[in-house]
Length: 188
Image (tube, rainbow, N blue to C red; front, side, top):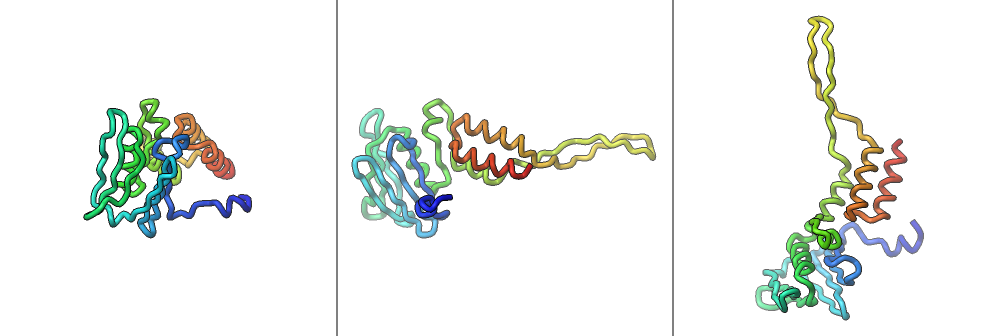
């Protein structure tokens, strides 16, 4: 990590999301410690609101293809976000309502795949599930065969193959793939 990276790294308690992919230039962050949402939209649109102030979210239709999100408090509108496509607004609303736990990959949605990026990243961080294998053991005393279930070893090569599939799907970035690949290769 370089000096510039140290200054620009995001703290662990800040979750960010680009509901329409990174090319749309719409980004929202959520501070899990304070509950503050910070929205940065196109054309200079900015908004800040706390999760405890949200009463409900109105997803208002502007045209057949576009909607606008109105973040409503008890007595007032907390924020009016950009007019965006229906799919981007659905993603944004799901992300806000789930406090950052539901994050869909917009690029994959355009290809007809619904990939929850937050779940994929959590699965990567948790590592692969423990696999089991059945081993036939012969009992020499009575000449019978029994089956024992034993956990298979954590195979770094298998894990790298799984990460490559996620990279090809677009669920993780090349940078994330390279980082995890290096960690796994160091285990060999």
